[in-house]
Image 1 (cartoon, rainbow over the protein chains, first blue to last red):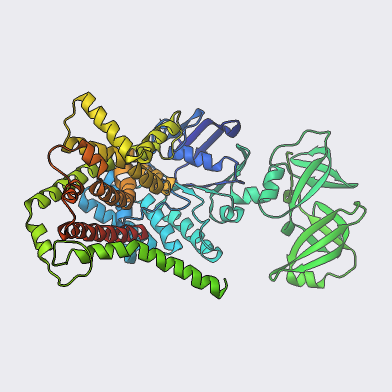
Image 2: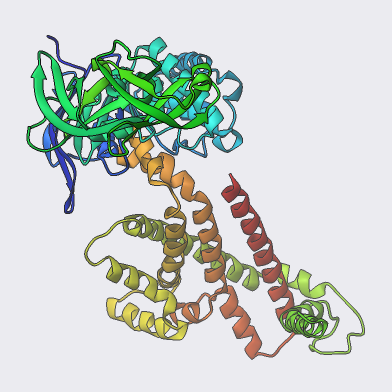
Length: 359
Length: 260
């Protein structure tokens, strides 16, 4: 197989006593939209800065198309960045900002003008060419920052939480835009955020980081429905966590005991060591409410003790029978939710809906 | 605030304004007096003193000499001061505090002491008194103001600006020239005007280190010894108007630059 676009090879970075990254390995393929997701201090920004050349790893290598660029300064890497505060040059117009990287690439005047026009019409900035950054709105500045970083045609585009400064309504719109720009340019985007929703909507692939290590690396669907660890299950979306004892395995299925009920799930993060209690995660919308026992692999009986109307759907709080007060929360469609009464209900879910977590 | 206090405060304010401006107004007024002696009453007015000053080669030469010294010393202090500021700002290294302290020191030493010290030092090194020595002492005295003003401006430059320039292919020198320097221009302009005015205004250093040619303040001092006459008022008024115009222009210019 050919070299990946980017390969991080056992990157370790320490700041004083704290380890920001420990032995990070990662391959990024050409054309991917990869998101590094995690809380602050998880090492995602450090990874970005190492890719950009603003930090040097303590050990390990950064390969770009197979070439070792670990020690190259930012100006000698074919990588551009969209900064969190956009970092537009205030004394330059939009056009001059965009031309900056092109001039330093040694392009001629005509070539620069052509590229400027191309990128500005692509990002619908045509009307703003002569304006200064101070005369633009937040969303426009963000587009200029993107245009400036894309103009020199980098192999990899780094995005450092570039949507953080936008208001919620605009953010949703820009997320769509970014994704479509990435698709149309077929560029490789390396996006850093702490916002799980942002990560889920835009990414081809999400790398969840925690304490300088990769917690899980997969597609948004993978991470959401098949979390490998408790951290991932809780960080992304809402979930029910069920703590019980491991009974063993049955083919691919993991069997656990939960207050005397036998439940079947799968273990995307590997089967945990026996002995200690184990935890499994079931997403709220994967639980079904039925009047009679459903044909799903897992079914428990309980009562509805709370209903919250959420418009398109309803959240049900369910008290499980004979489970020492254990509760489950389920999303059902609003119609079904309304019809559920005080009578006992069956709660059912599939084996594939329950992820047994590795910790 | 009570009404009583307010009246008292405004009285204090206007008293202060009078204290500052009345001497200046008197000085300007006396320059137009048609008599050899300064003082009231003024019976008739004339512009002869002004025309006299503008035709007096001695005064004009001194003025030109002062301007040349001011420009030269300002160029030197701006270059040196900006350089020091760029080296010191945002960096941590051993001895930084000492270097900063030593840089600021010339601004704190009383003029007379530094003038004497310069005089001794100049003799020791065999430096001729005159223009070179004056420029040298003015430049040293002005560097701290440039350093402080430029450092203050530099500290507000977001780090991401330089990183963005580097990211787009600029080496550290190009990043400085194309991003940092334009950002510093308002501060450098402000500092330059301040240095020009400080140098133009200086008497002590110019007096101790001067050769045979007097700067404008030294010439005025020499003229004073032969007695006050409205001629001095005329010279001073011209200098006052010039410095005020430059000062106001510079203030407006830097404010406009800062807004961008």
